[in-house]
Amino acid sequence: MKKIIFLVIIAVSISFVASAQKKNLKNLQIDIPTGYLDASFKTYDKLQKTIWSYAELGFLETKSSLLLQQHLKENGFTVEAGVVGMPTAFVASFGSGSPVIGILAEYDALPGLSQDTVPYRKVLVEGGSGHGCGHAVFGVGSSAGAVAIKQWLEKTGTKGTIRVFGTPAEEGGGGKVYLAREGFFKGVDVVLDWHPAAQNSVSRGTGLAIQMIDFSFFGKASHASGAPEKGRSALDGVEGFDYLVNMLREHIPSDARVHYVITNGGDAPNVAPAFAKVSYYIRSPKRNDLVDLIDRIQKAAQGAALGTGTTVKSEIIAGFYEKLPNDLLAKQLQKNLEIVGGVKYDAREQAFAEEVIKEIGWSVDSLRKVALVEPWKDKPEKRNGEASSDVGDVSWNVPTASFGTAAFIPGSGGHSWENVASSGTTIGTKALINAAKVFSLTAIDLFTNPELVNSVKKEFEQRRGSDFKYESLVGSRAPALEYRVKKQ
Image (cartoon, rainbow, N blue to C red; front, side):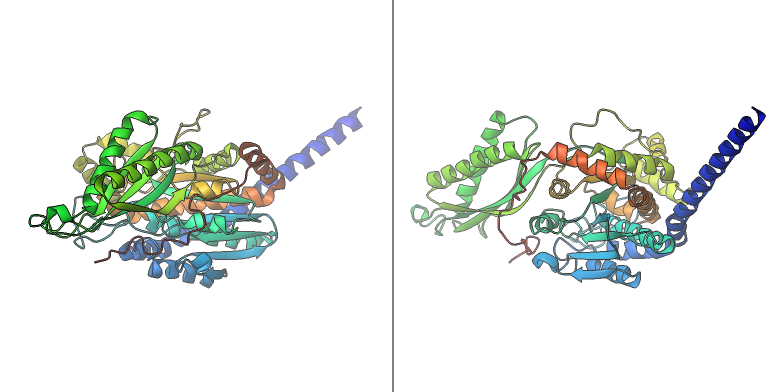
C-alpha cells in the first residue's frame, strides 16, 4: 500500500512539474512578441506620427502605404503591392503552411480635418485632411503586431503564416471589398482586426450595411433671368430628388440611415446649371433590406428628373456588408485584451487629455476608463454604433473578429479634431502597441491550438449558412480611385 501511495505521489509530482514547465514555456513564448514591442516603442511612435503627418486621403495614400511596406520588408515579409488595381493596396506575408492568420491594416485620412496635436481646435493646413478616425495608428499597430508575431514564429520554429492586408480607402472607397471580391481571403483561416477607440473593448456589433451612390443630373443651361424658359436646371433635379428622399424618411425602417451632400450645384446663380451632382450614403442593418431601400431611392431620382425635365445617372461608388460576428474568436481577443490591459497615461498625457475633455464638455472622471478593459457582455450590442465598414465584407468570407484600444479621449466625437489631436501623440502610440500585443497573444493561441481554429471556422460556417454565396455590393465596377479627387 505504501508503495502505491509513493508511486501516486511521484506521478502527481511529475505531472505538476510538467504542467509548470509548460506554463513557464508559454510565458517565455509570450515574452518574445511583447518584449519586442516594448523595446520598439520609439520605432512605432515615429512611424505612426509620420503617417499621421501625411494625412493622405483614400486611394491616394502613396507615401503611407509605401512606409508600411518598407517596414514589413525590412522585417522579413514578402510584399505584393498594387493588388486588384489599387496602387496603395498590398499583401505582406511571412512564414509557410497553416494556419494562415490575416491582419487588416488601414491608413487613409479624412478631408477637412487638419489639426495640430494640441488640446484645442488648431488647423495646420486650411482645408487640409487629418486622421480623424485614427488610421495612422491603425495601419502601424497592425504592422507592429505582425512583426512581433513574425519574431515569435521565427524564434520558436512554429509552422504557420502571418499575412498583413494593406487596405486603402476605408472611408468611402472600400478597398477590402475588392480584395474580397477577387478572392484574396481564400485560404486564410482567421482574420484579426482592430480600430482606434475611446475605450478598450471587443466589438461584437454588426454595424450597418451601406451603399454609396452618386446621382448626376443633366439639364440645359440658359440665362436664368433673360431666358429662363429655355433652361432645365440640373440643380432643380437634385433638389427635387433630395426633397422626395426627405419625404421618404417617414416611411422607412427607423434603424435605416440616409444622408447626402450636394457636391456640385452649378457655378453661378444667373446660369441655369446644366449639371449637378449629389452623393448619397444609404445604410441598413441588413443588406437585403438595403436593396429594397435603394430601389425606392432610385425611383425617387427618376421621378425628380421627370418632374424637372432633366435626366439622371447613378453610379455606385462603394458598398459594404454588415459584419458577421464570431463569438469564439471574439472571446480570444477579450481574454488577451484583459491580459494586456488598458492605456496608462503619464503626467503629460493626463494633462493633455484633461484639457481636451474640458474642451468637449465631459467629466474628467471619465478618463479613468482608458486604463480599464470593458467586460465581456453575454448579450452583445445590437449594432456597433451606427457605423459601416468594409470589414463587413471580409467577415462574410473568413472568420473575423475586431477590438479597439483607447487612442482617443472619452467623449470625443467620431471623425473629429479631438481624434486627430490625441491619436497623433504618444497616447495613440500606446494604444497601437497594446493592439499589437493583443494580436500577438491571439496569434499564439491560434498557432498552438489547431482545435481552436477549427472551432472558430465551424461557428463561422454555421452563422453564414451552407447556401451563402458572396456577391459584393459594388458589382463588377473597378475601384473608384478618384472618389476623393476634387475636380475643377
